[in-house]
Image (cartoon, rainbow, N blue to C red):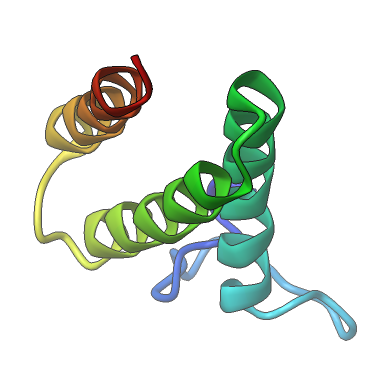
Length: 87
C-alpha cells in the first residue's frame, strides 16, 4: 500500500494488469485511518476530517514536498488537535 499509493512509483515496482491505480490505494489508506479515528471518537465528522487530512498529507509526501519525519509529525499533530477539540 505504501508504494501503491505513490503517484510516481519507482520504476522497479512492477504493476500487472488489474492493479489498482495510485489514487485508489491513497484513498483506501486514508479511509483506513479515518475509520479508525471514527471508531475511537464516535464522531463521523472527525473521521471524515482525518480521511481528508491523511490523504492530503500523504499525497504531499509522495510529491516530495516534505520528508517522512514531517509527514509523521503532521499526522501526530492531527491526533492532538482532535483530542483538543473533542475534550
